Image 1 (tube, rainbow, N blue to C red):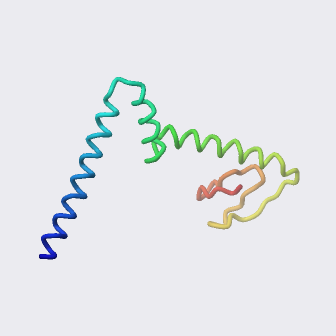
Image 2 (tube, rainbow, N blue to C red; image 1 turned 90 degrees about the vertical axis):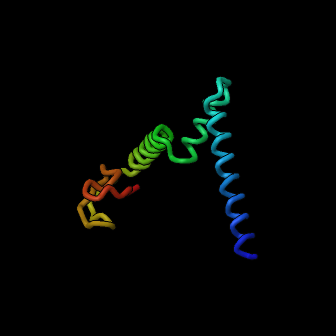
Length: 100
């Protein structure tokens, strides 16, 4: 009896997920202005390339501004790989670790 109830619950959840996906596809295919808003939301939610690029460029600009605040040059090992990094490096040239 419990197996039947568990199967019904799982099938209901799967059906609800499929219905939600069909609804989202219909909204995206709609000619109204909501499709661009939905597309931006989905890209931001699931890490779309444009949202990632905008965030990365904003992070790079902020890191460069923080680097400009440091007046004294330095040279020290990267905490992750030990490669020597300087005050000019935002990311480690060897391993790509964000330094600032």
